[in-house]
Length: 321
Image (cartoon, rainbow, N blue to C red; front, side, top):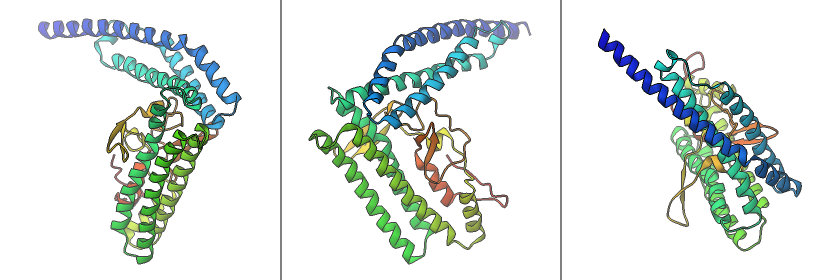
């Protein structure tokens, strides 16, 4: 018993030291964020003032601003825990969560500065573009997978022909994204217009996907099919980070390799952006949430679940992630 008590006290001392170190790290990183805040605000105001992707950029900025207020409040509340509280790892987890949220705030600031460079064709703008196309290429790859599932559950010749046409459209969309990069290089399109084109391409691709899914589910007369259709109409699947956030790499046809990028640092507002809290929300058929008057793009991985997951009699079902 004595040895057990000594072990608990020893571990508690270690956790207290860890807690103090974490608090120091939080304070240091928060100070760094605050030190660049005025410059980020100035750059944002300048970009929006001249109309560069104003709606999308404002939504991105407003989400980050709201998140900054929340994180600041959490930091003010976060203090090294008392003696007995420090014997638990839960308090250390709070510090980890704050640090993770601060990292996304830093990414949001980086996105504003990247937008400045991108819109001015400053050195490094090509790297910014590689980051911006990451989510849409991931989207289109996922929609290719959804087409596979649609094909596997369909027997209607007419719908199968529509799926084949859909695949062609996905391929055309990938070509269009690549062509946007070429047009940027040649000065044939402005950077803000290129971002708007990405929005248009992904919105149209998602709309086509939703139409095919609805048509497929509506034609399935089986009991499971009826349950799946009811779940689709009632938006019965819930979002999680695992089924809606973007990864950190995408396949580049031009480079013939994976391109690594930071999906939390895009100019466009996505599921990975600071201030976007999607956990547990209904998973929309469009693959897009609405926040601050703008679109929040989700990785539409969960769309496949509407087609393939089993549904119980109450309309629920397994939600694989």
